Length: 152
Image (tube, rainbow, N blue to C red):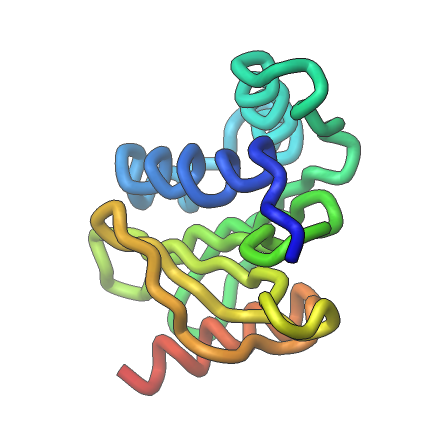
C-alpha cells in the first residue's frame, strides 16, 4: 500500500487543523482580502518550502471557498488528487450555527479500495475515523458533514 505524500499529509492533517483551531470562527466568517484560494495556495507552497524538493507538490489545484448551508457555514478546501490512503480530496473548516468553535472534517482516500473514501475529523490534535465517506464530490461531502452534525 502506498504511503501518503508528506506535503499532502502535512497540509491536510497538521497545518490546516492547527490553523483552524488557532484562528477559530474567523477562518470561516472573514474571507482574506486576497481570497481563500490565494491564501491557501500560499500556505501550501509554504509547507512545501520546508520539505525536500522531491517531496513538494504544486499548488495549482488547491482552492477554497465559503459555503453557507442549513445550520452551518464552512470553508471548503479542495486539494490535489489523492494518490494514497489518508490523503484528502477535500477538507472543511465548519462553523455550526450559534457555535463559538469550528470543527474540522476530511474526506480521505480509503485504504483498501482506491475508489472509496473515508470521512474523518480532527479535534484536540487527534484524528477520528467517522466511517465510509461519500463519492469525492464537494456537494456530497457537504451533505455528509450536514448529516453528521444533525445526528449529534
